[in-house]
Image (cartoon, rainbow, N blue to C red; front, side, top):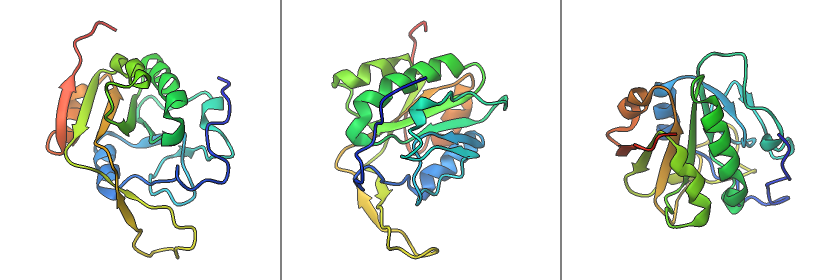
Length: 181
């Protein structure tokens, strides 16, 4: 799949990291096999990662593994370009692996519409405290945290919705879709 570069060149604003508690919940669903929009300070333990310079949307997200999780915390300044591709890949790969996308819970926005193809949503309670990018931070130091100015949702394409429900039921409202996709 070919897509234009979707990152702001040299910008740190898109490098907000997934909080540790959310990574732990993702690992309850299964091993994370791909993080297509990673960065050097990411704590997501994905087997395969694509960085800004790689442009994760240029690659096929399928892999030889029969299971596992594709986790996507996209650059929010380019969410309109990422969402349709993630939704397409989620639908395409849902019988083989789980695709979980973290975005702002802005259901009224046009860019959100492709996400209705997901099998379920987790509307997370409260506001996430993302790990702030800090290139000067030494390894092993406690990362800075910054609260998001918006509520967040996980859109999930999965052949095993019960696994996702079990991992997230106590940190958000889990809603299964009834649409015949």
